[in-house]
Image (cartoon, rainbow, N blue to C red; front, side):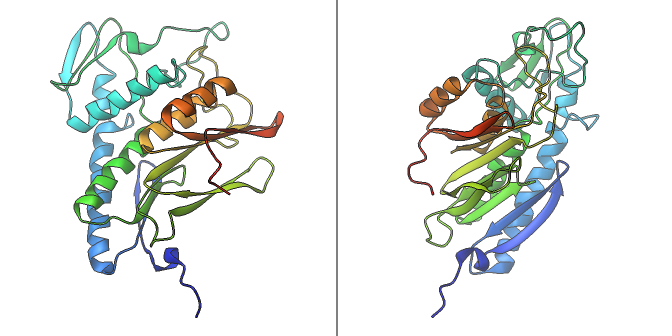
Length: 291
Protein backbone atom coordinates (compact mmCIF):
# COMPACT_ATOMS: atom_id res chain seq x y z
CA UNK A 1 0.00 0.00 0.00
CA UNK A 2 1.33 3.42 -0.95
CA UNK A 3 2.27 5.57 2.02
CA UNK A 4 0.17 8.74 2.22
CA UNK A 5 2.07 12.02 2.37
CA UNK A 6 0.44 14.08 5.17
CA UNK A 7 1.13 17.34 3.34
CA UNK A 8 -0.88 16.12 0.36
CA UNK A 9 -3.82 15.66 2.73
CA UNK A 10 -3.59 19.22 4.03
CA UNK A 11 -6.22 21.75 2.97
CA UNK A 12 -4.69 24.87 1.39
CA UNK A 13 -6.06 28.39 1.74
CA UNK A 14 -4.59 31.74 0.66
CA UNK A 15 -5.14 35.46 1.12
CA UNK A 16 -3.35 38.70 0.20
CA UNK A 17 -2.09 41.01 2.95
CA UNK A 18 0.99 43.07 3.82
CA UNK A 19 1.97 43.10 0.15
CA UNK A 20 2.41 39.31 0.29
CA UNK A 21 0.50 36.10 -0.25
CA UNK A 22 -0.31 34.40 3.03
CA UNK A 23 -1.03 30.68 2.85
CA UNK A 24 -2.34 28.16 5.35
CA UNK A 25 -1.92 24.38 5.12
CA UNK A 26 -4.29 22.75 7.58
CA UNK A 27 -4.66 19.08 8.43
CA UNK A 28 -8.23 18.55 9.64
CA UNK A 29 -10.97 16.06 8.74
CA UNK A 30 -13.48 18.79 7.89
CA UNK A 31 -12.37 21.02 5.00
CA UNK A 32 -15.29 23.41 5.40
CA UNK A 33 -14.52 23.91 9.08
CA UNK A 34 -10.83 24.40 8.29
CA UNK A 35 -11.79 26.97 5.65
CA UNK A 36 -13.83 28.95 8.16
CA UNK A 37 -10.96 28.90 10.64
CA UNK A 38 -8.48 30.02 7.97
CA UNK A 39 -10.82 32.84 6.95
CA UNK A 40 -10.91 34.14 10.52
CA UNK A 41 -7.13 33.87 10.74
CA UNK A 42 -6.62 35.85 7.54
CA UNK A 43 -9.15 38.40 8.76
CA UNK A 44 -7.04 38.88 11.89
CA UNK A 45 -4.03 39.67 9.71
CA UNK A 46 -6.04 42.21 7.69
CA UNK A 47 -7.06 43.96 10.90
CA UNK A 48 -3.49 43.91 12.16
CA UNK A 49 -2.22 45.50 8.98
CA UNK A 50 -4.52 48.49 9.47
CA UNK A 51 -2.70 49.26 12.72
CA UNK A 52 0.85 48.10 11.97
CA UNK A 53 1.54 49.31 8.42
CA UNK A 54 3.48 52.54 7.96
CA UNK A 55 2.02 52.78 4.45
CA UNK A 56 -1.51 53.35 5.75
CA UNK A 57 -2.00 57.03 6.55
CA UNK A 58 -4.15 56.58 9.65
CA UNK A 59 -2.50 53.45 11.06
CA UNK A 60 -1.29 53.53 14.64
CA UNK A 61 2.31 53.12 13.49
CA UNK A 62 1.98 56.13 11.17
CA UNK A 63 0.49 58.15 14.01
CA UNK A 64 3.34 57.12 16.32
CA UNK A 65 5.83 58.31 13.70
CA UNK A 66 4.23 61.77 13.90
CA UNK A 67 4.55 62.09 17.67
CA UNK A 68 7.10 64.49 19.14
CA UNK A 69 7.84 66.75 22.09
CA UNK A 70 6.70 64.31 24.81
CA UNK A 71 3.33 63.73 23.21
CA UNK A 72 1.71 60.34 23.74
CA UNK A 73 -1.04 58.17 22.34
CA UNK A 74 -2.88 55.03 23.35
CA UNK A 75 -2.46 52.05 21.04
CA UNK A 76 -4.13 48.68 20.62
CA UNK A 77 -2.84 45.67 22.60
CA UNK A 78 -1.37 44.09 19.46
CA UNK A 79 0.47 47.27 18.44
CA UNK A 80 1.99 47.46 21.90
CA UNK A 81 2.82 43.75 21.85
CA UNK A 82 4.58 44.07 18.49
CA UNK A 83 6.50 47.17 19.61
CA UNK A 84 7.55 45.39 22.80
CA UNK A 85 8.78 42.40 20.79
CA UNK A 86 10.79 44.75 18.56
CA UNK A 87 12.32 46.41 21.63
CA UNK A 88 13.24 42.97 22.98
CA UNK A 89 15.02 42.03 19.74
CA UNK A 90 16.77 45.43 19.69
CA UNK A 91 18.17 44.67 23.14
CA UNK A 92 19.16 41.06 22.49
CA UNK A 93 20.98 42.00 19.24
CA UNK A 94 22.61 45.09 20.76
CA UNK A 95 20.99 47.34 18.20
CA UNK A 96 21.47 45.23 15.08
CA UNK A 97 17.68 45.13 14.68
CA UNK A 98 16.10 48.55 14.99
CA UNK A 99 12.57 49.48 13.89
CA UNK A 100 13.44 53.18 14.31
CA UNK A 101 16.05 53.16 11.54
CA UNK A 102 14.55 55.25 8.73
CA UNK A 103 15.52 53.34 5.56
CA UNK A 104 14.18 56.11 3.33
CA UNK A 105 16.42 58.83 4.78
CA UNK A 106 19.72 59.12 2.86
CA UNK A 107 22.94 58.92 4.85
CA UNK A 108 24.86 62.19 4.56
CA UNK A 109 28.66 62.45 4.55
CA UNK A 110 29.13 58.68 4.50
CA UNK A 111 28.18 56.03 7.02
CA UNK A 112 27.79 57.38 10.54
CA UNK A 113 26.53 55.61 13.62
CA UNK A 114 23.54 57.59 14.87
CA UNK A 115 21.58 57.37 18.08
CA UNK A 116 18.70 54.93 17.90
CA UNK A 117 15.19 56.31 17.98
CA UNK A 118 14.52 53.85 20.80
CA UNK A 119 16.25 56.33 23.11
CA UNK A 120 13.32 58.72 22.53
CA UNK A 121 10.53 56.16 22.16
CA UNK A 122 8.87 55.23 25.46
CA UNK A 123 6.51 52.27 25.84
CA UNK A 124 4.16 51.98 28.80
CA UNK A 125 3.07 48.40 28.34
CA UNK A 126 0.55 48.36 31.19
CA UNK A 127 -1.39 51.40 29.96
CA UNK A 128 -0.78 50.80 26.21
CA UNK A 129 0.68 54.30 25.85
CA UNK A 130 3.48 55.31 23.49
CA UNK A 131 5.31 58.63 23.79
CA UNK A 132 8.17 60.32 21.95
CA UNK A 133 10.57 62.93 23.30
CA UNK A 134 12.19 65.48 21.02
CA UNK A 135 11.93 65.03 17.26
CA UNK A 136 9.61 62.46 15.65
CA UNK A 137 10.79 58.85 15.44
CA UNK A 138 10.05 56.95 12.23
CA UNK A 139 8.81 53.46 13.13
CA UNK A 140 8.84 50.64 10.58
CA UNK A 141 7.67 47.16 11.61
CA UNK A 142 8.50 45.63 8.22
CA UNK A 143 11.22 43.45 9.70
CA UNK A 144 8.92 41.86 12.26
CA UNK A 145 5.35 42.43 11.10
CA UNK A 146 4.78 39.24 9.10
CA UNK A 147 6.14 37.03 11.84
CA UNK A 148 3.98 38.77 14.42
CA UNK A 149 0.94 38.45 12.14
CA UNK A 150 1.55 34.70 11.83
CA UNK A 151 1.66 34.39 15.62
CA UNK A 152 -1.73 36.11 15.91
CA UNK A 153 -3.22 33.99 13.11
CA UNK A 154 -1.95 30.87 14.87
CA UNK A 155 -3.77 31.97 18.02
CA UNK A 156 -7.00 32.21 16.04
CA UNK A 157 -6.54 28.74 14.55
CA UNK A 158 -5.82 27.26 17.98
CA UNK A 159 -9.01 28.88 19.28
CA UNK A 160 -10.82 26.97 16.52
CA UNK A 161 -9.19 23.75 17.74
CA UNK A 162 -7.01 23.62 14.63
CA UNK A 163 -3.75 22.18 15.97
CA UNK A 164 -1.86 20.82 12.95
CA UNK A 165 -0.97 23.49 10.40
CA UNK A 166 1.71 25.47 8.59
CA UNK A 167 1.19 29.12 7.68
CA UNK A 168 3.49 31.53 5.89
CA UNK A 169 3.65 35.11 4.69
CA UNK A 170 5.33 35.39 1.31
CA UNK A 171 7.41 32.31 2.21
CA UNK A 172 9.93 34.51 4.04
CA UNK A 173 8.13 33.98 7.36
CA UNK A 174 6.84 30.52 8.27
CA UNK A 175 5.13 29.16 11.38
CA UNK A 176 4.12 25.58 12.09
CA UNK A 177 2.10 23.92 14.82
CA UNK A 178 1.60 20.21 15.26
CA UNK A 179 3.51 17.29 13.80
CA UNK A 180 2.19 17.32 10.20
CA UNK A 181 -0.07 14.32 10.53
CA UNK A 182 2.21 12.53 12.96
CA UNK A 183 5.29 12.73 10.72
CA UNK A 184 7.42 14.54 13.27
CA UNK A 185 7.00 18.08 11.97
CA UNK A 186 6.38 20.14 8.86
CA UNK A 187 9.23 19.69 6.34
CA UNK A 188 11.04 22.73 4.94
CA UNK A 189 14.06 23.09 2.68
CA UNK A 190 16.69 25.81 2.87
CA UNK A 191 18.19 26.45 -0.55
CA UNK A 192 21.21 28.49 -1.57
CA UNK A 193 19.78 30.90 -4.10
CA UNK A 194 23.20 32.48 -4.58
CA UNK A 195 24.84 29.26 -5.78
CA UNK A 196 21.98 26.80 -6.16
CA UNK A 197 21.28 23.56 -4.35
CA UNK A 198 19.74 22.58 -1.04
CA UNK A 199 21.72 23.61 2.04
CA UNK A 200 19.73 21.51 4.47
CA UNK A 201 16.29 20.19 5.31
CA UNK A 202 14.44 20.65 8.58
CA UNK A 203 11.15 19.82 10.24
CA UNK A 204 9.26 22.58 12.00
CA UNK A 205 7.54 21.24 15.11
CA UNK A 206 5.79 24.02 17.02
CA UNK A 207 8.38 26.45 15.69
CA UNK A 208 8.94 29.14 13.08
CA UNK A 209 11.45 30.00 10.38
CA UNK A 210 12.29 33.35 8.79
CA UNK A 211 14.68 34.45 6.06
CA UNK A 212 16.20 37.76 5.00
CA UNK A 213 18.40 38.96 2.19
CA UNK A 214 18.56 36.72 -0.87
CA UNK A 215 20.00 39.08 -3.48
CA UNK A 216 17.80 42.01 -2.57
CA UNK A 217 20.84 44.26 -2.57
CA UNK A 218 20.75 47.23 -0.26
CA UNK A 219 17.34 46.83 1.33
CA UNK A 220 18.83 46.19 4.79
CA UNK A 221 20.34 49.10 6.72
CA UNK A 222 22.96 48.54 9.40
CA UNK A 223 21.49 50.51 12.32
CA UNK A 224 24.91 50.65 13.97
CA UNK A 225 26.41 52.67 11.11
CA UNK A 226 23.47 54.01 9.11
CA UNK A 227 24.85 52.46 5.92
CA UNK A 228 23.24 49.90 3.64
CA UNK A 229 24.40 46.30 3.56
CA UNK A 230 25.55 46.19 -0.05
CA UNK A 231 26.81 42.65 -0.59
CA UNK A 232 24.59 39.70 -1.44
CA UNK A 233 23.88 37.90 1.78
CA UNK A 234 21.16 35.72 3.22
CA UNK A 235 20.15 34.36 6.59
CA UNK A 236 17.63 31.86 7.89
CA UNK A 237 16.56 31.55 11.51
CA UNK A 238 14.50 28.89 13.29
CA UNK A 239 12.99 29.96 16.62
CA UNK A 240 9.88 29.08 18.58
CA UNK A 241 8.46 32.59 17.99
CA UNK A 242 7.84 33.81 14.42
CA UNK A 243 8.23 37.50 15.26
CA UNK A 244 11.59 36.93 16.94
CA UNK A 245 12.72 34.71 14.05
CA UNK A 246 11.83 37.56 11.67
CA UNK A 247 13.84 40.13 13.59
CA UNK A 248 16.84 37.87 14.12
CA UNK A 249 17.03 36.94 10.43
CA UNK A 250 17.48 40.64 9.66
CA UNK A 251 19.94 41.24 12.49
CA UNK A 252 22.07 38.22 11.61
CA UNK A 253 22.92 39.72 8.22
CA UNK A 254 24.68 42.48 10.16
CA UNK A 255 26.07 40.65 13.19
CA UNK A 256 29.39 38.79 13.41
CA UNK A 257 29.42 34.99 13.30
CA UNK A 258 30.60 34.60 16.92
CA UNK A 259 27.85 36.90 18.19
CA UNK A 260 25.27 34.98 16.16
CA UNK A 261 26.45 31.69 17.61
CA UNK A 262 26.25 32.99 21.18
CA UNK A 263 22.78 34.43 20.67
CA UNK A 264 21.51 31.21 19.08
CA UNK A 265 22.76 29.23 22.07
CA UNK A 266 21.11 31.66 24.47
CA UNK A 267 17.79 31.71 22.59
CA UNK A 268 17.72 28.00 21.62
CA UNK A 269 17.62 29.20 18.02
CA UNK A 270 19.25 27.90 14.85
CA UNK A 271 20.61 29.97 11.98
CA UNK A 272 22.27 29.66 8.60
CA UNK A 273 24.25 32.54 7.09
CA UNK A 274 25.68 32.79 3.56
CA UNK A 275 27.26 35.52 1.45
CA UNK A 276 28.77 35.63 -2.00
CA UNK A 277 32.26 36.41 -0.69
CA UNK A 278 32.46 33.37 1.57
CA UNK A 279 32.29 29.88 0.06
CA UNK A 280 31.39 28.37 3.41
CA UNK A 281 27.88 28.26 4.83
CA UNK A 282 27.83 29.26 8.49
CA UNK A 283 25.66 27.12 10.77
CA UNK A 284 24.79 28.46 14.23
CA UNK A 285 22.87 26.64 16.94
CA UNK A 286 22.18 22.93 17.23
CA UNK A 287 21.51 21.34 13.81
CA UNK A 288 22.42 17.79 14.85
CA UNK A 289 18.87 16.48 14.48
CA UNK A 290 18.33 17.96 11.02
CA UNK A 291 19.35 16.44 7.69
